[in-house]
Image (cartoon, rainbow, N blue to C red; front, side):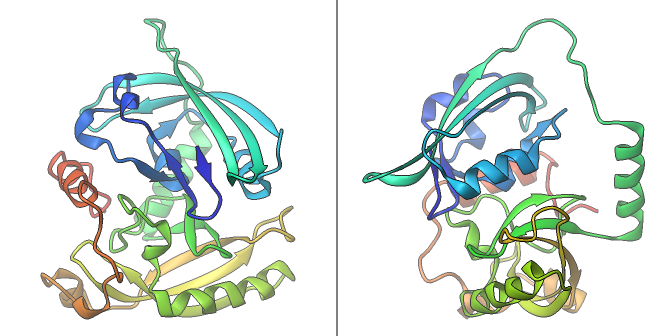
Length: 262
């Protein structure tokens, strides 16, 4: 189930029985950005974001995608999404089926996609699609910014400091009007607190009326600050992370899958 208010997908524990996710990685709620980051051989991100953003009852979409878990198991999932808007909530129902077979999976990234991603990595460029209304990172267009904790969050909006989210939403007014905008906001880090990041926001062609923007993230903090055990520890989210999220993150980091690595 996709919940429009929290911008998360609720996952039953039985999802670990599907090829492509291990019990050590399981959390009951996941952001759409995390789900996108797990799947490959897929290029329909904007269609999915469009359906989830509208959350129109009856809207439907189906697609297949490859999924690889933290220990290297690759599977094939079939996603069926149906929008809902009723007295029980607004969002979308998700049906996830394991359609993994022994047949070789095809349709990998194109040469252009691989080359562009490598060029961005070498240049240190970090671009993402950001949902401005809810202050969440919806999809990384390049490698994730290594100083920002965007994954394993029960509330994806915690990636931005609570006092800065209103400013991000205000910038959306300029972006939706076709202008670029910039600001320095505090983003959550892997060492436990918030540090400044410079954001450059650009309209996404074809979606000027939607609260989505292309955002470039630039680290605005001193490197020694990012390496310290805790920085701005008093500015942590008001409620602690539910049991499991930090533990699952540590499992992923220990597996060498950390987005902290350049």
